[in-house]
Image (cartoon, rainbow, N blue to C red):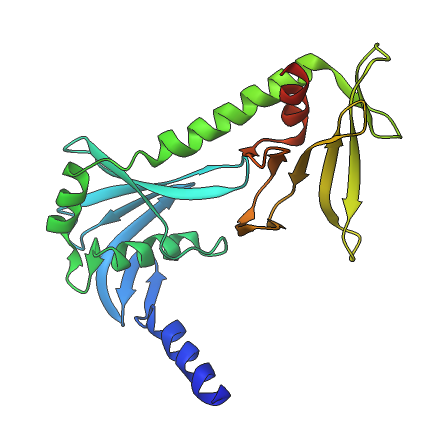
Length: 239
């Protein structure tokens, strides 16, 4: 039975992208057939037909906060049309090939070259607005960090949270380690030592909650908030 299961997964894994893609001297080969040209400059990839009659520009975009995320923007310079899409295949060691493989999976590129019909439908269709989503999150985090800095919070050796230059304790933070001495969670208590929240790091679990949590704080009311720990302390203090 184990052999059958393993074989099944191997078939699924290898069949997700069985076509052979190679890039040599600016030429894209699909199963040893020339299908397009590609010119790369930093994070911009110009993909052209073999006769240079048609081309599109693919730009790799990314944000670093709260965690690295990468996506792509396709643009037709002549028509001034653009739209964004996520990588279907991605390797940080072969981004150029990752772009081509993603284009093939989405049928922007096939054995006959650039699929202008699919590309035009995508460019003139509903906008995905991926940049707005991810860059908006990054801007929010940057604003939160500025707010945190403005409070000048400090944590002493006992886990007491105070404002710099002030001995008044706002709350306390206790670090709980797991069996491997990694961070399991932080427990936030009020001045009377009542637990008011639990902050969980990346890929954490919580009893009664099925999904993984990612830098989220759980209030005593079991309400989940996605906050960094400093901002969580500020909000708890100001409520």
